[in-house]
Length: 370
Ligand SMILES: *Cc1c(COP(=O)(O)O)cnc(C)c1O
Image 1: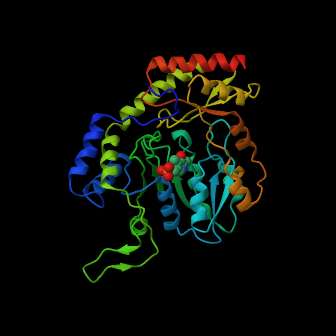
Image 2: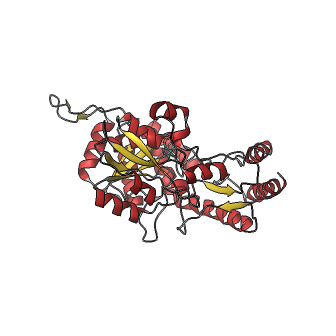
Image 3: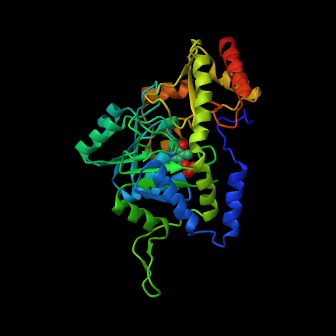
């Protein structure tokens, strides 16, 4: 089902039961389900603290604030990402600086990060694009040498682990997940920040809920300008239920990806993304289409056949808001080439093998005829 979308949630009866139980529990927010979801996230990722929030974007905003990002600070982000990675810097009054990516993987290029580090640089936000882990060893070395804070935008990557079994989001000071329906698990809308640092966890919790310290009747005190970035118990009940079957969902996505890999190995025009990992969340299955193929025509023809394709992503500096806010950016060669070549094709657990075969057949036929 849903070959007409590149990604999709899978909701089963257990999820529906879990949400109904939350509705019947008498507590809709700031209750036990939020804490239980946070504990489940810690258990799954191995992080010490998890702070569940209303969206991945809210998580990025809080993480950047907790890192101390403010006016006059710069944060290095990849040019190929969802706009929110950069937008959250602007929310803090800081400036996002765009690094180039590696063409074959779509991941931030550590050499490009090094070139951009200046006296104002405070942090780096690598994005685990499609669920593939960035070169965190090199990025952490650069950060340690230049005393920078690393915040992983792991919005695509819950369920991705490195060869040593360490989870996405645990390599930097903080890691941010998104639970939007298209992401590996969903809470409807939602997100979380994970960290092993108690001080950061305290700041994140404080800022999530207005900056007001909990206290006795007379002791409530607002000590920082916080937000309402809380997530409800209804959403968290869904998250707990979804997290239980994440590994199973990924097994299915990996099986689909293997079918695609095998089919495209024979094509000179379709190149799957390179990844150092054996297994990842497979949030997206991006392919790079050869420059001889007219992508505009291909995109239209695929949509015509109800194959849900999408481009991830337009380089952030190209958006008209960013051009107005930060001025025209000189094109980053790999980001531009990637944007030109990339196409995300349907990869989610609701697809049958027959639907995957249909997507393969249509894509192979169209790329060689357009
Ligand atoms: C989805 C996404 C976000 C934002 O997450 P929301 O939960 O939709 O706010 C941030 N960064 C990346 C890379 C994403 O894909």
